[in-house]
Length: 298
Image (cartoon, rainbow, N blue to C red):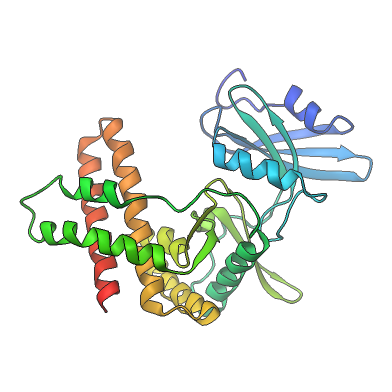
């Protein structure tokens, strides 16, 4: 590509759809060359259709996409978009998939919407049970190390000492295949003839994790978005009702996984030299570990 905003209408599209004509290409997500997303309006023998192209370097996403393409229909679950084609290059991979309308549209946080999301996640987990995905992250050592960063903070030593037990409790929870990036920009909740339906995009972080780990985005966003906090509680009730896992364990899994995601962001910010932002994220990380401890003891 000539630049970050240049639509990749060229050899990759022709290789993916050799018998189709491309009428129009528009960007869906600006970003680096290996992160950009475009939608192509194509015409084939069965008429016009839209194909979303995502350019990625994420090895987990590439591994999952290879497995999906082995299925005759390019998918194993209707909770994710159908994968249409895949073009692998030396430095990046081009994924072409079904275009899902309504992605990113926020819904009013209520129990019916939350239950629709939860059921879609659990159906996805059941459908993808045989898929090779990333294992649950090993986080104990990194959490202890991060909590050693401010030894004078009140209560930090006790929190640090609690980490091994918290991680052991997390590993003992029921497991599921989690999307790990459940937030409005990555899903579409739409009315259909049989009722509300939910579908997800951006499956590059699929992993085996504790039931409830998928709450981490709403948990993190609830710190600055009241609606996210309301939706979070509805999701907790939905997971508990559908799985039989106690609400305290659902909340615990969401909080501890939110701590892990904060830890990852803190480490990334430190590498970038953003010291002040990294320290803010460290505080958020410690607060989520505290929340997980409180849920575990409730």
